Length: 164
Image (cartoon, rainbow, N blue to C red; front, side, top):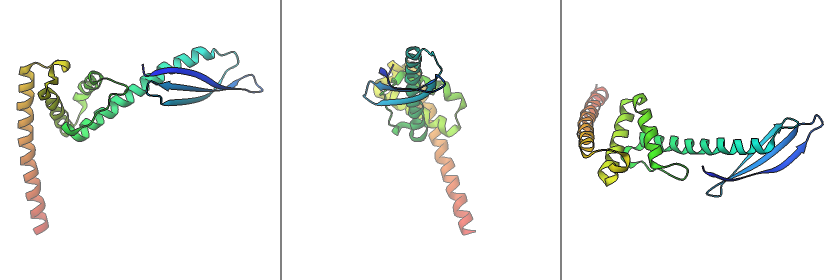
């Protein structure tokens, strides 16, 4: 969990018995996250603080994983991922869960990225066998050839429209 400390930094009682609470949560990198809310009279503030720390930690992790997936889908093998709050395995697992929902282009980007990982001797941590790496490489090469043909056809159509 990325949150390493949490504290209630301010309590402002209201006339109706409720209390404005300000919390500060700090992650393992020293980044702070403030939360302000109105607590009911008699609310267990320590439980609310601890519960939110868990929720916030999960949100931070999921945000980084989503950013990593966006990097891969936009940049393929040139993607630059961060692992401040998540692990490579978590990001790859999220990519695998999303694979069925990707467009064709995004699928190509993901396949190229995974092939790059696999061919950089990272296949073992990802759990890919040598045969799977080879099969992925063949599939990506076929897709790349198809994309080259598509790009050439687009160029021809565009040139004909301009000339036409």
